[in-house]
Length: 66
Image (cartoon, rainbow, N blue to C red; front, side, top):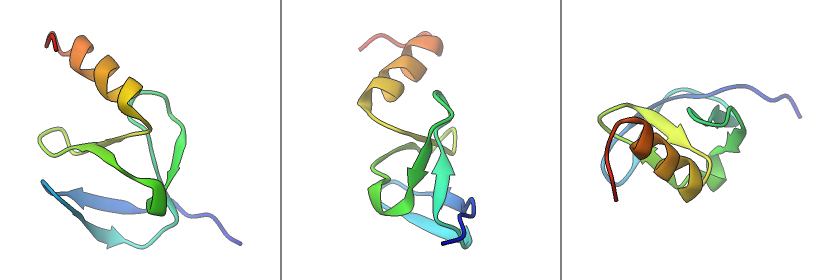
């Protein structure tokens, strides 16, 4: 199976596929996220996250406290 990075537009409860592919890259860890496992993203920053750990790390880096 050929792996190809997808290009997405992240919306509040979904995402649109702009360019077909199998995965996206986590903006924090650099890990590949298969599209069927993608659950975490930021609409304003238009970036994906591998897990809640990376989400929290990004919020902290932006100066936001949970």
